[in-house]
Amino acid sequence: MNLPLRGIIPPMITPLNKNGSLDIKGLEKLIDHLIGGGVHGVFLLGTNGEAPSLTYELRKELVSNACEFIAGRVPVLVGITDTSFEGSLEIANHAKEVGADAVVIAPPYYFPIAQAEMIDYLESLVPKLPLPFLMYNMPSCTKMQLSLETIKRAKKLGCIGVKDSSGDMNYLNMIIKEFKDSPDFSIIVGTESFLPETIANGGHGAIAGGANFFPRLFVDLYEATLKNDKDSIDKLLDKVLKIYDTIYNVGQYTSRYTKGTKCALSVMGICNDFMKLPLKRFDEEERKKIEGYVKEFELSNVLN
Picture 1 (cartoon, helix red, strand yellow):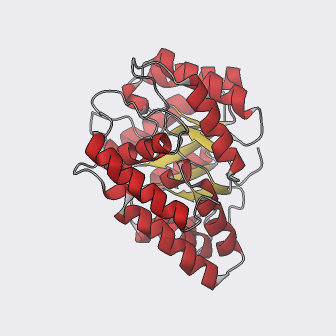
Picture 2 (cartoon, rainbow, N blue to C red):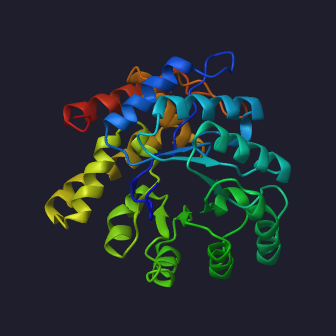
């Protein structure tokens, strides 16, 4: 795994069957779809992967099969965030055993904790990790915005980068500025519309949910940004923003992002769109809307 990590790294959804088991055929098709679209890595067991809703056994099955299908073609990152310290280590050790390249850590959820407590947590966890790790700033799900001091301490402990999904460009720019003289430390944005500005300011890429269904669109945007091809950036960013107005805008709950992502993959014939409770897949009316939006994108050659 070359550092810093760069490019488009989809936070892969977890394909499931109706009975809640892993959709193995769908998983293999999805991975081929992602790698065929030019992605630079795959992030398993993130928010879009519904990680907190999966049993440890199912998480391990996903990681094992994904690593087998990916077969070293791109780096594999595995989310280990959990309410249980031992549970996080269990998934981390399994990820190492089956060939993953790094793990991703967000603050443990449920109990609100202070920055000092988060640092204490890292100082206990990191020495036991079998793989390199990235930090994951996801305040909407964890009740905590990682402070600059916490990220700096994580780096001293060996952290190789940070994914920021705060949606706060000022915060992201602060992180980029702080670590601009650390060439092996990756700054990865989770808000996909921020990709061009992130790269222009010195960041390294995006963990973009939309790259699950339209990987080539995001890879093209990343490459256009590296070339500072402003005409292409504008055209491609318009298409990314259209995803927000269409596929991400079906349904009334925040879960529509993950539901829309899974539904789009389903109507494209890549994998099933069943979900783990408390989430449920879209109903038929919502699915028809997604079908219509996917066809619109097909007509605009986004899938090519």
